[in-house]
Length: 301
Image (cartoon, rainbow, N blue to C red):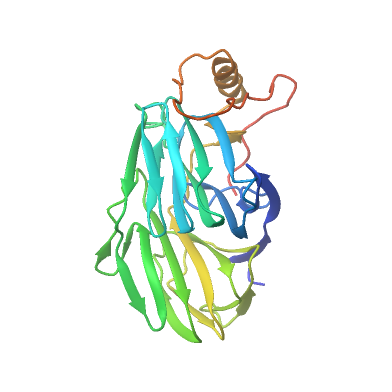
């Protein structure tokens, strides 16, 4: 494979009783632009007595970006927000200096992508905020029905704001389809198959097969790629300018060094600085003790 491309396996985990594929961060690739976390959950049928329930937990230094594909999820946060998230909608929560939230599935069928966006130094201690986006631009790309989640593509512009240059697109086909995607050469990109199998053709003529649980990383410099599938499939495309600031991601915090992590964890466990989530029937999640860990900011890769 060309050094400009990397095919990276996601690893499996569990969030609130729901099995997920985690594509970012990994040992080989920590970020794509400012995107520093990517979980794909589902598609899954949840037992009636075991819904997805994620108790109140904190965030700092990031934005959570929730993209719902199937089902319904109820969001509550320490700003007093109560928002139902439905298919085709985005919830954007800016943690800034600190926020807490909970998430609960409201349907048996569930599929979503949960992403985090690292905030640059100038914004990472901003006041927390929440925004809900029920309508996003829809594009038809030669058989791929496409939702522009964030950023620009051609003449289309998503209403979802970003503090650094970003791109997010959801592409799906119901039958065999093939299209060319134009890329921003100054961006690095990541492609993750959510459903089905896709063929990715690069500018140098190399082709890669992409299946669920894999992330294809493209270094800056690419102008276009060919995307095709012989059957129904779904793909998430992320992009952005390389994030040059050091980032330390630990538990639910995005920080710059271990001292910050230890302070965030201690404050949350002591009930300081993050507010309270009202209405969730259950206990809040406590931060593990980071004191014994040798935390350091990883090199940018």
